[in-house]
Image (tube, each protein chain N blue to C red):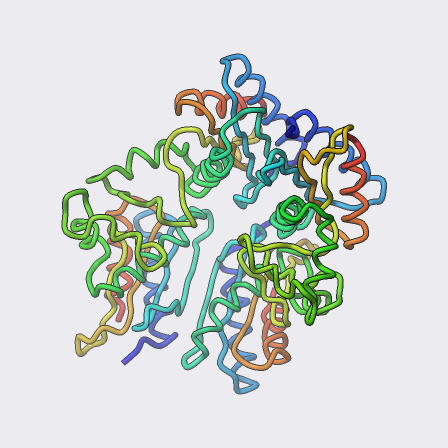
Length: 132
Length: 132
Length: 132
Length: 132
């Protein structure tokens, strides 16, 4: 199973709505099961540098099948995955990348959000993921 | 002036409609006046490799403020811009990248389309641009 | 549908056998439906530089759902896809990349072969693909 | 002396067996004495992002002729090789990369494993190395 564009657009719409609700401006990226970009939106006035971060968060979540922030806990100095960010052309290992699953619980892609605090990023990504 | 996300989504919707009309599956990318990605959509079943090409076509159009295919005429062996594709992290210089202008004729971004023949790519990109 | 490691190993074994039959030394790479590497083998004495080429041929075939050499016909000077090789981190557009399909005809990945003439590369890749 | 493909395949087979025994799904990569990839396998369902990590662990081990995790001890903040991961296109400096030696004790390559805890990765890599 792989995500469709219609599903990806639903994820982005839900994430945008959440971003507006909490008064933030986000970059939102959806990748498929192969970690390839399916859909992207940068809200007006959102940080330019967050576009690449949103993409890398989505990829990071799918690369290791967990929220991007979980990787970050393990990649701190002294922890087991220290500096894993140097792999795969650059990971982003703080919160904001969340897996996307279908109603059977199968992974069909991931969403990455960047533009505010990591708590807000994660919350907007989760709102997107819950739209499926 | 810069493109808004709402305008970018209008461009993508018009391009998608045109792509369906001519029975193609496209990757469609919109960049703003700074050549930074604003919105992207990969239609179901469209070529994976065309995502990067759609982005590079849009950037190429905005980098030189002309349709991407115009650059390609000048980058042939013996021509004045031979191998310009090596610049800017990789250009795509065949048709499918088109400038986006507001109703005063000011450049506000560009759209890049990839997934079929270059004629179809250009035609879908133009349909997108005409939505503004 | 996506290729399994067992299928990928069958492809590599058949390609290696063909390579020996025609007295060549090959790099053989299999990617899945998302263009991510599944299996790889470099035969003893095969060119070092062909490892990356084998990977890029496999990716190129999957990126555009056609044999890599078909892209090369269109990317010549004056042709419609001139210099497409600058996309996707570098394409290889000469023969040796071939799609892999299951018995329903669905694309499940691609194989790329490099190490000899492009005719030999293509023939070894095809032998690999026929093992499925 | 350099590793042969037959030896590399023996290493991968032993590593796969160990991975199954401890109920993990691994990416396994073997490089030769020149730190160039010889063989690779991604087990079904293993993390996509671990392919590049397995390669980088193997390279890291051979680049400095020690287990990848030893580098990681020296690359912590305040230590002598802080941020060495920025070299060579990206190192991975946590456990899972192990040298491969022939029966005379000469280095002939390295194996890198990624897909589970670093303890499991290292244990699977060691099982692979012991097959020689």
